[in-house]
Image (cartoon, rainbow, N blue to C red; front, side, top):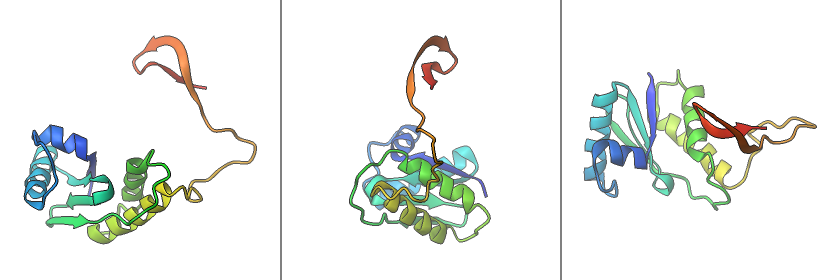
Length: 139
């Protein structure tokens, strides 16, 4: 099963909604995204968790409480978890595991991300060249 993993902001814009604060708003949104894109859908709701529909039905998986240090790339980590667990059929269980990993990640526990001795983190700077991706380049 392929999944569209989308942010709450994307879901709101794609479904022309003002908010996804309540369950009655969430289910029609997920259904609309699933019909539009033809895949399973996961929408990240930050500290409210995730909502999903894999074609077997709607589910909501709450986020795990976390002491927020850095939320950068939290949605990306959830997407990676979905890729790594692609063959695992139980979507709510898959999302619970993904939420566990995301909560550890935003608490600053980065041990799950390999580091290489002697390497330095990639930094971005202005390259001065315009291209299809703009003027930012990796150095």
